[in-house]
Length: 255
Image (spheres, rainbow, N blue to C red):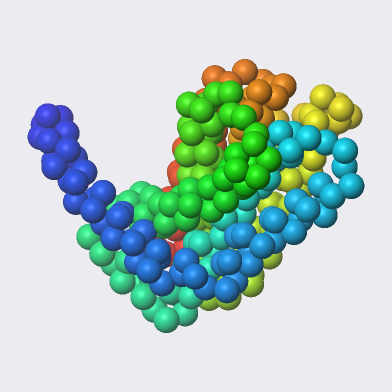
């Protein structure tokens, strides 16, 4: 009996992956160039970073990793909070819910669109650092893994918040920004964790951006507050938690 269930699961994997890709492709074609996504995913983190970076006597090597981290945070989590409320409004999201796919696949497909979008956007600060400021990446493998995991982590976070049953994009974005903005200030992007008061250091442990920024800083040869392996493990845990939480919320709100 167990082997039959395993075989059925294995045979379903290609179909589920194809369905997840179809969901992501649909979002890519419709939402990537929408003005509110461009503003919240690219321009907003750039202007915020410049507001804090200008006037600080720090080398680009110390600033570029933070720019990459917050760019991924905003770009990866900006697709689903826009696409899902809009699709609820035009009733196309109901078709996804009634499709013969698992809820995990739906969540994965929605997160995949934010993940791919973020990978492209992350190349902008990365390229600026290498081409304009000649910043050197000391650990390319760790940087690549950091960008991949961070992008999917925050894409899943965006999908999690988009589970809130509303047709209003602004409602989801407002709730999401209540989380994204504090993350920037408690995650060591602008203020090193080691210089924070004890309560700040404790709170920083609860932020996925803390471990993403720490790993990216390490990749550029900067000081690492944690070990790279620990950063990777914690990011994977956050991905699993966000995925499971999103799956549960979509089931709850769409029963």
